[in-house]
Image (cartoon, rainbow, N blue to C red; front, top):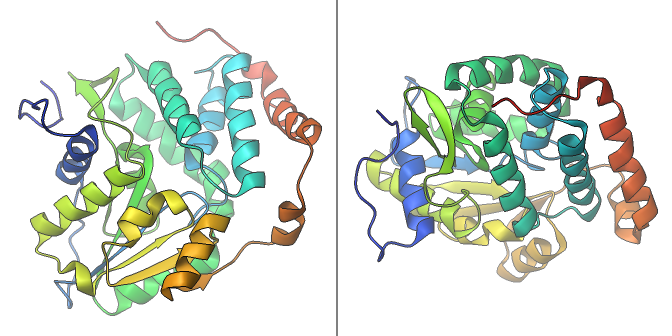
Length: 292
């Protein structure tokens, strides 16, 4: 038995639509007082709520628990270093990291990974939250609006972060699950770019939301499709392309980062390699072959 969409996808349905609909179906709704039932807020996670990539922080925590090899974590570290310095997402990197993560957890029970994710949030993610963005989520909750996270991270991880932050729920990348275990396959594609917009659109239909009354927050130009869906788009810690787009359209822009100007000057490849190696070396004692 699987926990994915039971409908047989047709070749005419784009993968982004399949991924978005699957994410909306998997989104759990927290029971809460809703004073404004037709409005909601949607928040990206990486570099919007959490400094860096949440999937990388999860990977480090799992590596400490001997899920990964040294080489696996080195690859994660390199992509994380690129993300932190460039301040933007690379579509190919996101897809390859998610594919790698799926291969790591394939065969593992969902409950096991979620339980470990709960521990890892407390260890590695909680102190990397942007307090100002968290305050924005609270503002929406205080006026009786629901608040959803929307992320390319696995839906289990996104939902865990939403629960920890006492938000409504989350939309995330949906993995195929059979008999309570990950198969290592995705439903559709990673929830990234257009797929995020499709997920928000599908959830809005399910929850009877008026997107013109909704808000969305993100750091990445890849999320312009999602931001463009709502009446109140906001750029948080934006990459250069999103900053330009937001200014051109008069969108609100907030930047909560420190050292942003230094990052813009540019960092040599040698420093990036050094950062990646440093992160990986810190967990070299955890290396082990992947579970089979």
